[in-house]
Image (spheres, one colour):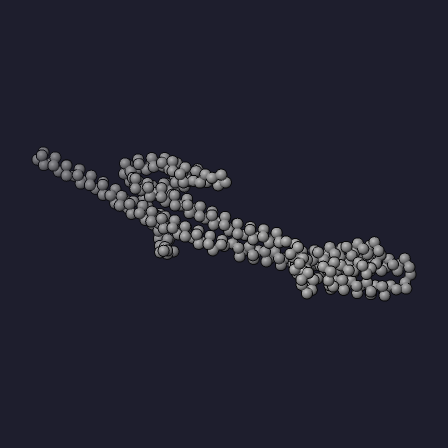
Length: 305
């Protein structure tokens, strides 16, 4: 399949701008009636489906614009102008189809990622060697850790201190670094406040415990924000990677577009040659009439002489 070069495409576009309208009165009269015919063609060209409805008015406007630009005269020029309008309309449809394919590709990828099964994510956490460390690498994981810490905080407010039961955060039934850290806090505070004054010492231990848990929650919130920024960048990159349609669809679009472009520029070249030939004939016509009038005048002068 021979492809048209960029230079040839540019030359064709420049040449299409050189077409001139008719110069004779007869030609101008024909041109004035041509535009009336394009409205009839719109019904055959525009798509009128249930979900997709193209605008017949816009197609008529395109035909009218091309008619005014190319000013066809005669049946052949009208046919070529109509072909140019039809191919141009189809090319617009190709661009719209390409945009639709891109939107589908990006939207489907985003929806697929947003519908990721949380249970599968939890299974991945459970299988990792460091449950908490793995969870800290995602927004969802940090939000879960914060939820667990808030439950520990609630237990401290109720019990007045960290208990052995409270520090055993779920962790999917496995030892984890967060439970180990909470256990160290529990033992340290117990030793620190051991033997102190009753109620006053208990209040201090409770207040100190809540402060340490709040610090842990703050850490997880900072990690969550960092993960959120990273995941947004990654999502943008994934969407950019999905901008191109699938290879099979893209190839189909490009082949169809190339075929339409060949039809378009072939019709434009044919129309240009016809109009150039007509222009030369129109320029010769007045000279012929002038020559005939001069010859007739000479014959009348000869008769008088």
